[in-house]
Image (cartoon, rainbow, N blue to C red; front, top):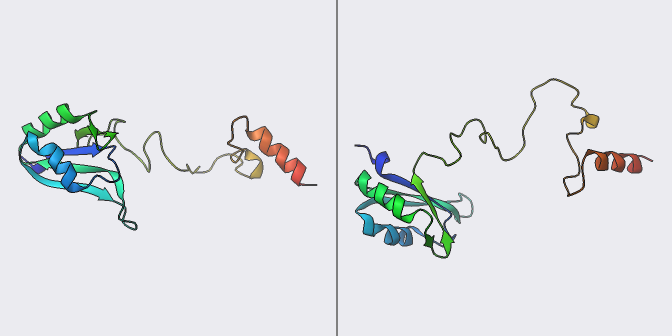
Length: 138
């Protein structure tokens, strides 16, 4: 039995929730061997999620079922077994849904007229960007 089996992911944490508050909230389900609230490296501010490791995986499962969707410090939390994602497996740089920019690997004209960069405001679009080019090019 590895400690990974008893490890839970806790997401949606209030940025003021610390390890002690998290442990206090989950300790009624059984002995806890580790509590971590993940923090930003530069600012040391909470990133809004953490991990709790129970000494007994059965206690972790009970805690997960009981606490998922409950409120902690004014925020609804999501509790799941660590390593599992509600969105499925995470592949590539940011998974299938992605966050950030995607980079094309060749194929087609990728110049300024390709329409890749356009006004993202509601009602905007490639046509808006092309109009802006025409107006500003005179």
